[in-house]
Image (tube, rainbow, N blue to C red; front, side, top):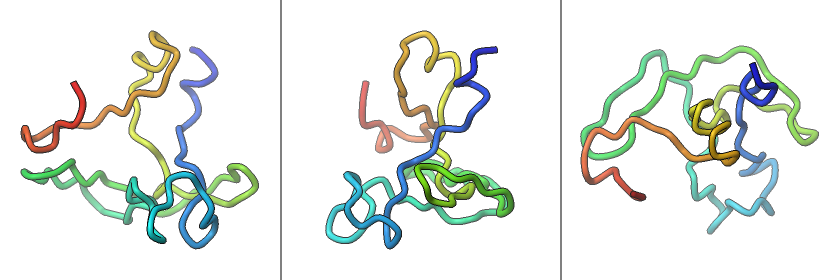
Length: 100
């Protein structure tokens, strides 16, 4: 197994902890991180699904402590095949499709 697959992809620290992050716009993260903790995945008809995120373990990323709310959905096969991060999420409607 490739080393990068064993690791989680984490969104850059942003928000109050890092207001100068490139994802910040008008004081909020454009990608809506950190996500909320949830006990179950909710399939929303009009937008992306709201994935289950459990509180618990933390990791230090770029000098800041981060938890499961910053994990970015990804597909290990696509990551290795194209050597690039491509967001992979379940699409439940055509309104949620942004890129083809």
